[in-house]
Image 1: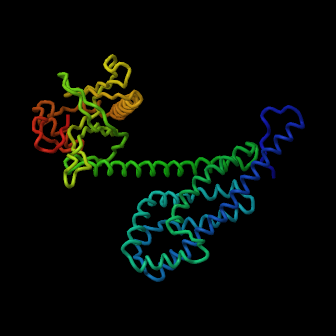
Image 2 (image 1 turned 180 degrees about the vertical axis):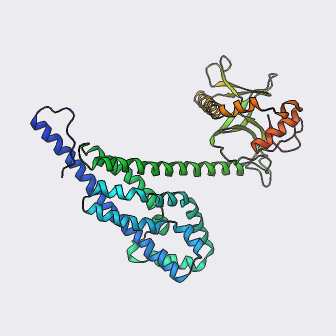
Image 3 (image 1 turned 180 degrees about the horizontal axis):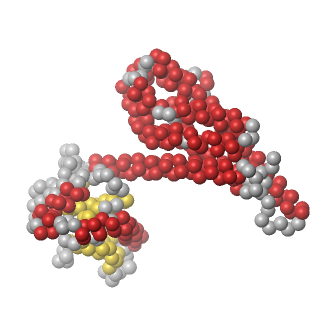
Length: 390
């Protein structure tokens, strides 16, 4: 049965036939590529299940919880994909994927565990001598073609992305009048949702690594960077302009989704912190106003004004592109934060807050607890290394 859609703008019987043949060729190429890649994918899944999961289970080289942490739902994935392969080889793409998609929860389980799987595998390779020898032996088999287990574990993640593109191509070259069109359309939607989950998990993991990196750049533990719901946005050097005309001093700034962190470099000759920064100020972005100030840099760079409820910050850069990027990043962060907190603001307006009637130090302590950033001394106490929340 042909999957070719009826042309939208026929210009004659010859052109209609040519267009149909073009769509049919595209569909045939996509179908052929999907079957061929599915065959290879199932072979690779079988390698993992046969030479790792099943043998490890029989030998007891790894505890069950460790084995499940590494391989997760890959056995279930292998099973459902073997069934899918049979359907694809018969050319039954629409109903084949329609029956496959209800089992995508095995992929969701695998997707959510993949970062943990990589960590556990690396730890076992490092500390478990018996497993390290076993892994090396299995990977040396001719069936593996010098492919490592670390390269095989991400395959289900990669396959979901491939399914999304294959299914879109098939759907675009299938007429809505054919019965295969609806199941293919449903499959595109279901697979795209899992694909989006993969992207979200990857972004979240990368963000966590960025937060941890910044945390390691800061000396001591007083400034808490890693916090639930916080996103790293950018970092860089800017000059802070004092209010009384003193010299503008370069500071390192780290911008997150909810706060702006100001830091200064530690002394280069410090035995342990020479390459680190000391946190000075944490500016919550909740009630921040961001403005550009013109006429101060003679078109070279620019000046930003950040106004907070208890402070005002002037930031300068001689790089026009850099200051523009900072302005866009800060404005976007403030705007998104205010948008997310609209409901919270309304609730706070209706709920009495005792912190509004306490001295400023208490208010700062409340903010410190809320932001999970430790309150430090005022700027007039430079001898102590800590971070002030404004």
